[in-house]
Image (spheres, rainbow, N blue to C red):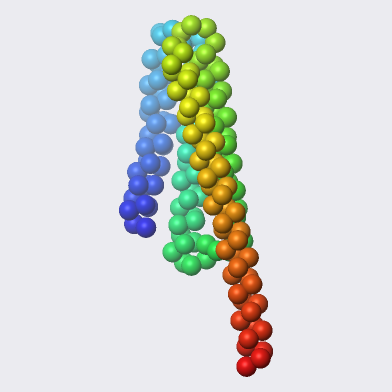
Length: 158
């Protein structure tokens, strides 16, 4: 858990750095490049993409905390899981939008657009994997409720 938290802190710090420093540097560099006309949509998509990464990190952190406390198999965990799924779907849509923005014209090679399509598909795949994990979480919560009811009935019998 400690290693996971260290990685998440590093990723969050990197995303904040990218939002503040790298986006500003990229904005300046794009002014004079062939992408100058597409600078605003590209930068907005990048910033929003970084926000989705931060949303995932915050809610995974909350789920890790719940796992450490032994409360992850509760209805409270669903909110965080839903937000993680939503963030991956939004990220996939942003990557798709970036591909559309870059595909118009002949400025960007088609292979870059194809790679963005693959990244979009990967993000959708991760969202689907988390959805399957959400289904498993729902089953575990249902089993936990059922076990609690059985224990209560057993206590009444004894």
